[in-house]
Length: 179
Image (cartoon, rainbow, N blue to C red; front, side):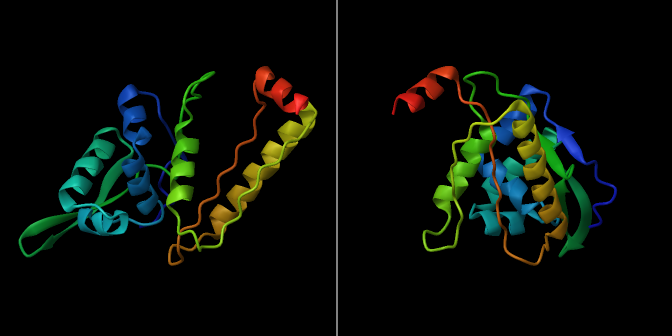
């Protein structure tokens, strides 16, 4: 499916959309659809769900506008639907102070579910940066992620890149400084 006509970003704005993307199973279904359309059967196989469960979750994503039917075909008298993402990326609203960060929770769940013997690169660094350095690092990380997204080949296995650049709350900084 050509992705040239897809909007760049889908902005999650409603409670229904937020509930749809907040579910880990639906997050994994969207990951399946990230690079190519798939049927309910294909989604179920790739995510490890029963077809009925897969259909339920896809319907919720479709109703929220996050995925759409991009093609249909008749197979033995049954209409087979191919689903794809409604945009290249999804932007969630800021969770606000103390709110759960859905993307990070999903990323940690995916990391924990990844094969223990698979190669992975997980690092955490504590930095002290000026506002300008903070902004520059954020822009460089985003540019690097965008560069590699353009290089992505749908025929290769999935690789997830997650980064979070943030200022911890003052209480967390003080605790870290005391150690």
